[in-house]
Length: 355
Image (tube, rainbow, N blue to C red):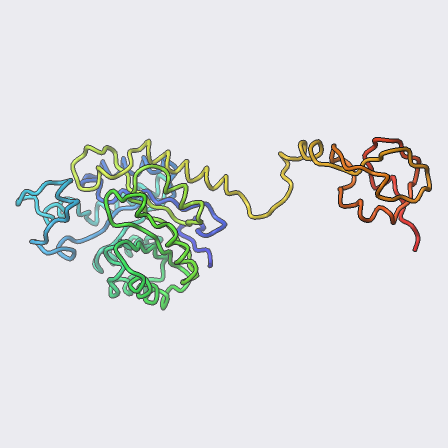
């Protein structure tokens, strides 16, 4: 696996988890709400804030039926069709321009999920740093190919997909960006149940595709962010809102500002706990090591010049002397000076016998 960069952030096994605060369409078409979402993402410690870029006419048929989830969150009124709902959430060029500039001012990375080629072209004009691919488009090979040709990192969600579809997506983008994509395990329910998370799929992606992996989370609570981080997720994405009672399809299953902050804190804390793979004595352990470990200690008087043998020594605390394993080679030494009983043995007390 090769680290990749999004903006000034390095993403990979030896870097902090790249956290994407998913604003999505929770701005409800309001620029002021969008700005507030950026503020919350920044204050919470997210690395990036992500929106959704689409042209409704390119995305959905006017008579397309709502999903069960959208009916539950927005109602079943014939006037409030899915098409009409999306129209209210569509962001104009001007709105993108203002949000992107606001993100620059707040020093947080702007990301977006494009749903059609026209939207990709618009995002290219803004020189976006990377592309997030929605699970709904991970089998849309023409769109994946169109985006991959831009040569920028791609974060590909994989909900509602089988391994053949994931493999097709990988084979498509690898032609253009062989080391610049991340596969994101995801479950396409809102909210998703913990038992449907299948976080081990991330490890399958690592094994089969030798790629970076992450998790796009639709569950509730803090178990998944901790577990995904512990399993090595390089990227983590989570929806958030200014209030769960706001009108719109995604507010109810999104994190509140305080929940977002706590989720990121849990991930950072887990990273801290995971630490390094290098095993060594920590500075914080030194005091206890010297007092709780054991050393070779003399049982009785040992005269200067006396050839040593293991029967002259015991193994006791403290750990300030020779390691216990030295008892196996102690017969190769003589006492350099008289050694009193119950002394920890130091190397300077001994002289190696001449061969």
